[in-house]
Length: 460
Image (tube, one colour):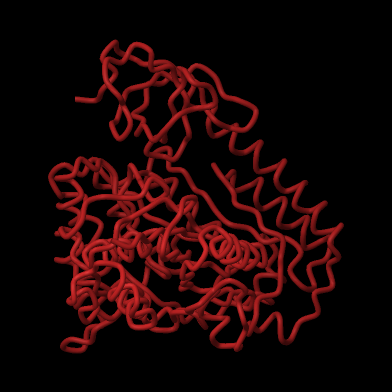
């Protein structure tokens, strides 16, 4: 049988999609291999959110082409979509599949390379009609994908202790810096019942935590049901002990959602609210649909409603026209918001966006680096201050892998604090389980060190 291998770049939506793509190859008879090993087909789900993501996508394509002589390298995802739209040639790639056909990568691969069926030992039915990424039914655009019951294996590089549930796709906000509305321009949502069923399958496989995600997840709709209805339903699934929301737009974080997060014990007290800038001047230039006053009020409302909630965010430094005064506003606002974790990016022009076409990228690289460094230092202080509140407490940690030494394991609390602890007392492998850990100290990077709170460790 031919072998297919998979790599993923970018967001949790991409993570979900690459797992479904891998399933679609497996049910067609492919063996599933590791991306670092030999394969007949390499599939890369690409990202284009930054210039660095573009470079990684190109590098992975070249690497895969060198890795196995004669292998077919197939690209899909946002970088692939931009390459299609701009007629860009990607070295190493033999097939580019647009985002709207992403869930049919296996079908397109077999159609493009029929010798995989003829010479590879695949059954004649190896190329059934695939499911479209969206199928219109009674006015509802629904995400369709191969059955999750079809194959339960995962190549190691795709293995997860959490299950990601993609519930929505598409964005129409057109922020000045972002190319995603151009690469994912079809809005759609899954049926609530289908999401709940998938969560139940994950629970039967021993998954304790699910992450609900979408390109613009707050736009989720299924008839009269919105995102708050969906997360409450999934959180009620037997066996699901945690539900975590991925990044959500501040303007889509409404009172119903806040009430859902505050009322259900299985919904993690953690929201990732993308800020992008703490300067109202820059937010306006970015075409973000809120200002700092709106964001501040929202954070205060969340902290009043949800005890010890973790607020994480994204911030861009060096956006075109950002002055030193604008940056100092961002620095001060980030310190005021006291984020528990911050992803910081230096601005890079993205194809087709308003900023790339209409604004001069006039903040030089050295200024971007200096601002990135200063903001990182401030946000690390906030991260440490958030974590230090946990010292002496016993917390529940979902164990995800090894820590910084062989004797340590690591995982995350419900409020997304990474914790390392000694597992020598545990009689079994704890990965994928939730254990009780007492926090002893906080490291310089904001991570926690602790020890098992009970000899058996596990949460009952």
